Image (tube, rainbow, N blue to C red; front, side):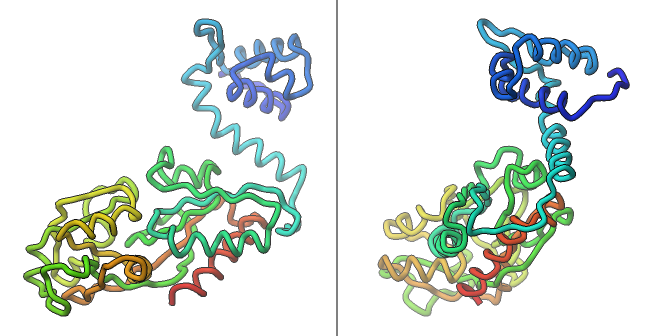
Length: 306
């Protein structure tokens, strides 16, 4: 790449060309003529040493190198915007911003509805977008770094070291089974627990032991997971029609047991309570808007699980 000075306007053109894959569309969006954008594209090709956009049939598509430029361009343009238009204050009552939170679905039934309620009361004109961690492309750490997500909520046993972290609340582990399960109430022993077939839910791409199994291992206990699924909301209905056992948090278990003929049994060891965290990247650490969002989530957590 030639060492030439590239101004912020060219950066904006480059970003728009790559994301829109169209000279004409870029011209419309930036209020420029097509010849002006074409000249800029030729200049950018010379500066980067890459064609950036190539023809595929009747349309243009970004080159593989161009795609790698999207993230650094996002960061560069965000930095320039912050310098030229610093946000000194933030008013949730008037903002129309979209906030994006990544979370596993075990929070859906008791935590996320409370967040939505508090959010809508304080920021009635804003939008909130929840993303399941299994659907976040590149993983939640990359999503926080790139700005795809503002915040992630979860209960990992060992959260990533490179992210900012705030503990929210704790919740202990229990075992759930159908009310008329062959294991009678109060009779769940270590031997029965370890010999039984268990239901497991995978909320994100894991390697090795998951959070629950790590805590069980601390108490010298293991489980034989014979059935797995991607969503916690499916679990109680599977339990109703099987002899499977399901280990989860008390808050989630209490919710489903109040609705369905299920019951809670203590786990035959003493696993530590799980800690819920909210995680964020340094890029939003001082953002007034995201600071407000973190305070809101922390306040909701304290009111729900102690």
